[in-house]
Image (cartoon, rainbow, N blue to C red):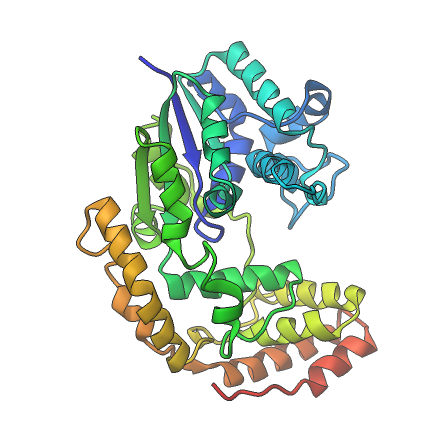
Length: 381
């Protein structure tokens, strides 16, 4: 029987971070079951962090996110994907700093090969949403990746979220990264999303399908994944890994910006000094931790944008139905037109009050408090 290669290329905000954290923490026990989640670093680096990876500890001398494993330990295959993309550029941009001490893609592939030779796994798992960028940017990288795993039975796993929900979540992730964006309620869809894989799922998938015609494709809607127990449980069941599914909440690796705070952080990314922008982001992320109640079901797009999104997505949805054989890939696609019950302006005012109350005890920055008190936005949508 051929060994299996499973490559997860699903989007951010569809459980990829939780799955990566689960695989990293349980790497040692998975190897004993013939399942390899290979690391992407040379043995000298591995020696310093093996115990931390196996136990979930964080005292590695590397900065951590929300008390979890450092990102370069949790997401080794994103590091590989970034290296491959960068090396394919005419003028490389340089390595992504928070992905640590990568050794170039060929060095990473050699290290993965060493781990395969050591453990002889029945299944090798590569998990990195950055792989999804191969399709629109450099489809030749898909074949290059596959060529490093000859004689493997290849499975490509991809989870996709209904576009209106995904865009809202990915927009918040970009705000958390510090990106300076236009408001979603205005022209952000046209400027930041419509021409990208974060909306055009055909652009994301087409090259993978054409470059790997013999691969097994598992293309799932995010809602179906949630209904089957969550990203980790679904991945385990669908790939018949034969291991117990964990409690998903123990592997929540990606804390989201509350929808009520999008406009505050968006303006902060534009207007604040970097130290205060970071303080603002931290204060926002701590609102949920402090059990401060904020409005839910916030409308961030507006009816005009929802109608435009729905119309432009029709041919993409038809494509997803065609390649998966489903009558409706997103069974609830019509809900993309539904307006959420809480206006963004009302949610924003509630969030400002909560933040100012929290800052009386925490962040003593006068600039930051003044920024929040004086923040005025154009709410015409």
